[in-house]
Length: 426
Image (cartoon, rainbow, N blue to C red):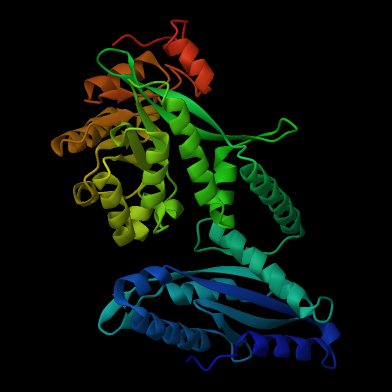
């Protein structure tokens, strides 16, 4: 389709260059290129437009790079560029930067203006010093790191990346083993009614502790589960354990976070409903919390999943509102039952003179759409009062309680013992 080399052709060129006379005087630099935003083009306008975009990218790379550069398409929206540097590892000009600048310019396809970008991973070595497959492996690791940093960047492979890759592989094996033994724990953080000060619900939070006592942070193991295909298993394990615990507390609601990757699973809604039925748990007591990522990247799938969950009687909350790009249209389109204000808007009250006005406007927007608002991340009485006066009906944060076990929750909130933190009085 593009007239470029494929992966086999690239390997042949690399091998030939590594064994050519005088190859000891050159460095091979391999650039792996992944298009940012290409999936959105396919989803929005179809694969025919996507194919034309691939051809246009190929042409632009040819026009931009030196005639000596070897360009290949590895498949899908991934390309490779092989360049040669004399003696030194450094190249001039920076090919990765050239590629990014070239692909940031808009493409005109069938009368449409399409904007994408590129992430670039680079690996370099003296010709013949590394097996071609090893150089490819390093470039691929560097590309993965570039995408992990937020895309739109060029990252050059470093020896330390292998250490990180090995560590993540070991952590993935440990997580897989933990999930096979149903070993993920769940902690619960109370949701407080802003008027009465009483607990009206709990948010379930995944926790993982290894047999050696190591506690792994959710912001580490949840992305790992997403990347390794374990997120569905992890999410359903958390949901099942949360529901089993919440059956003891029939007077309060249960909120459970769901990864955007889970929502992309076409069987997700069915699996949630089956868990509820098996546990004989009332659907109206469950609230699924979603971040806006899935709403932006795959709105059609999000719509189908949300409609299915709501039809089953399950409530849906938009989490972390105010931290990204969710708009009034998003709130209207998906019909959320609740909105959670991102903790950054609450924390800003302590140091930003405009924070109060921003918070009030955000809550007023939700209230105008008849969506009740929960404020999270509350740590002081002053913050609690401010969000309450701004219109929040539920409060959450360390002022009331840190995340605690199901047994601690029962003791503190149902058996009359003193709660772990100072109880807020509305």
